[in-house]
Image (cartoon, rainbow over all chains, first blue to last red; front, top):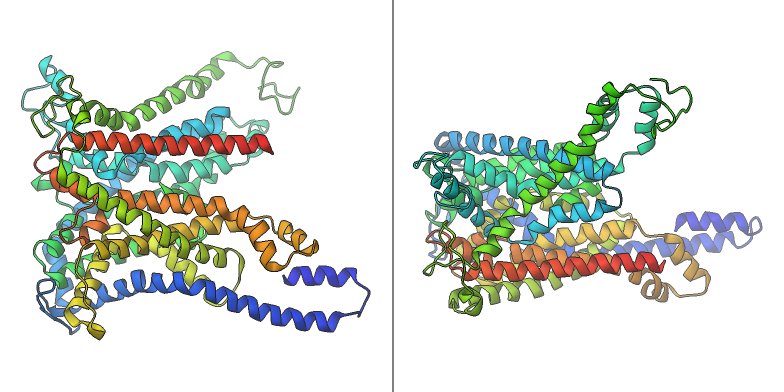
Length: 319
Length: 294
């Protein structure tokens, strides 16, 4: 608006009508600000009640003592109970590390598989670009839980993959993948693939092709122009892919519950179990807050590097 | 390389590059990468094929890993599992009003963030970013903590029972941020000169908004609604924390998976997938047509 005012100021004769326009401008600015807050308040209020306050409450709960069953009146009292944290860590540090390891392996495989695919579609997809990319996303219209259960049938002992191989005697009868870390990591890799593919594709698509041509004109070989031009320019996409895959994968408990076994427990399962089965809210809250803080560091790094309005986030989130 | 002749000699028709050096590099983009990409598409689609295939599996009442061809019985008796039907109905009953409310609130947020500058804009953007970036399990456990605390302390006599209301409340809470960023992106991409043109043609701000701005951001609002609807329908983690004994489609399927899911789950999965596919296809067609229209 302010810009428009100065534009018109240049067009109309010097000094004419300028003071009243400026006064109206100020009133208008005030009204616009008021309108902005009015439109902001319902959604903002909901976000405060439905997101900010719950986060504050879980932090308070994690430093409280006492507690008990939902609706049974077991009250918790805030008492700076840091022992919740020390207990959460000493009981579960192995599981935290395991969750991080599974998520890190899955994230690496995701990016390793998604990058060449996104690269080829973005650079050589031609008019099939949109269609090809759509074909990558289409499978994810199927519900997350159902998708994961299908891997049970694929990887199962007599399932689609190993059943025929066993009948042919290619693999031993007692061979199994289900209930092992391999199955859990495979499930996570599959389920979070679009979170890696989308930001990578967006970043690669954005690269100015003339820069690649310029590199070639300057006698760079194909692999050289890839390493020196394409790869560095796609770095924000790789970074976004790492965060968008790693953060949800660490907290995942659907894959480890459906595909895993007793030795593949992830932190999400423990948190879930403490909250919903054992009702040990204060310690469960501490475990959740530890996970949140770890992920928050990564999210803040993301916000710092790419900003909170970058479209790769929107793209990844939409997956 | 004798690229002296043509500076942009990428097409390479005129020059004679040493073939020994060129061929293996070409092979990567000409052969290896496309085959890899197609392989990836097959890999990503594979569980969907399995889901459809197993909707014809001959089993007693629960799915097993072994596939025996073929029966239409599960398609004929699609409504035979009462609890599954109830869960599906609950999912729809949450997703439609939830997405509607989230769209209403999120649209205003996106509109404000996309076009006004005001104190607190950065903070609001940051909260929206966090709401999307925080792992679902943290969000779910936080919401449950809040409901538990409300029930234990009863501020102003308020108490909540876990179930439909808490599911709906939570779904709106996590959807708002997604709608907001969708609408914000659309508003930011808007051509402001259109609105100025309308005002130059003596449209009042209100007329300019409803005749020019609103139609231009409408696709963003619709996309936001669809996104909120799909996210709500598919959400498992947050719902599982706040649902009490009420089941939505994903939570019921998850619970059933311990004993083996009834084959009707595959049937419903296939139905929902087809609806999603058709909706996406229509969107693509519409986008194509409007491109041609311009």
